[in-house]
Length: 159
Image 1 (cartoon, helix red, strand yellow):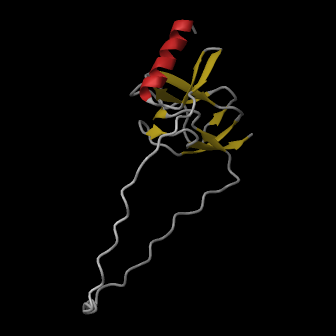
Image 2 (image 1 turned 60 degrees about the horizontal axis):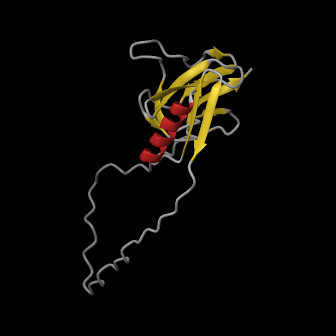
C-alpha cells in the first residue's frame, strides 16, 4: 500500500464519520481508528400524559373468537458454538461477484486462510478468511445485507 492510498483511506474515514477501519491488501494490513469525539445532545423535556378522566370507559366487548396464542420465543443460541464475526462495518457478500457460487456453503469444511465472504466497506472489497480449520454450521447474514462490527456471520465446528 502506498502513502497516497493510506491518506485517501484516512480522508474517506474522516468524511464518512466511521470510527475505525481495517484494510488488507495481500500481506499489507492497515488499521486506522479515529479519536473519539463526544457531542452533547439535548433532548426535549418529557411530556406527561393528560390527566385521567373520572369517567371509566366500558370494558371491551368479548367475542367467541379463537384464543390468542402467546408468541413463541426464538430458540436460545448455543453459546458453545464458535462464531465468525465481522471485523469491519460494511456490506456482506457471499460470493466474489453476482451470479458466482458462494465462497462457502453450510456443511463445507474450510481451512485456515480460506476466504469465507467479502465485506465491502467504503468501496473496498475486504476478504474475510477463516482463522482456523472447521466445518460451517450456519450462515447468519443474507447476501447483500449491511453488517456491523462484531456481528455474527457464520457458526462453525472446529476440526
